Length: 407
Image (cartoon, rainbow, N blue to C red; front, side, top):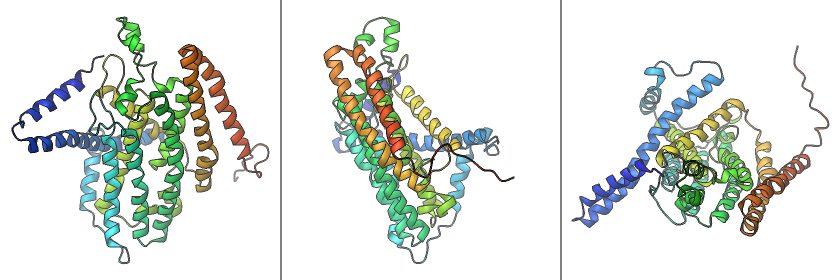
């Protein structure tokens, strides 16, 4: 594997740290800064670019030009938006809880930034390389629920409070299938370490074979998404991730057509911008963990490392944009029912499918396990999905839907 960029970044970091060998305390500070600051700046830059990309993508879907006035192709629009937010007045309701109103956006931003530190963005490149990194990622991510509810409650506004309560119900509900989907990968990989999970998605015997074709496909065909339990797990994980990140069609906590802007109703100026930034960083973090768990992480043919991780990350974000421009927002009862009555039972069943796949692979080899997994394992998941769909169908919906349009 050619991890040129990763190795050069590691060598540069080690060289900079070596300059402070004579001052151990300062060397620790430099190590922390080098591990965190470039990552934070990179994701802040990714946030700025992704806002432009999303607006352009949605504009193309809706047959309009999108941002095209500030800079070439409107690329400086994020900068203009940032300046506008900085200049806006910060209006705080008179009856609000001033302290919690101020703390809420900060508390939302902190776990988002910590979460990206657990991502293995390259070979040996991780700001927080813990053996239990995946566990800590989900633990830190659950703090978002507290921050969103704090914003709604402290605003002393009924719409804000409704948005906060919706957020608590939604995030707790979808955290369960989210974690259950990740359990299958942890079972098969036998580790909570992100780097080890990425390594488990490579085929070592092919990579070191000296055959160009085998080396190429040895870094692709081992991805968990190509296995029956991994494909189903990725779908469940991605759907739950959309809900966790408040992305459409699960953006119920801030449904403007129902509750104005939900928990953001009483926020303006730069506080509002912090919520906006935190939401995008959280979306990147959860897309990054999906890449790590199911899409081989930084592993890939020709040029492994950071380039592949960035390509996969933005590919998933592009799918998020596509979904936002395509699907309408769900009703809140549909949102909750889908999590508890459909997604969670399937995620639990997928754990058993993964366990049987692992047993079959140990007993009869990978090929037999793959064939049996796709036929029986994935077939069982499809039958269960159809059964749950019929079981949860409203008794009022009999026969084919008939739509009536005004003339």
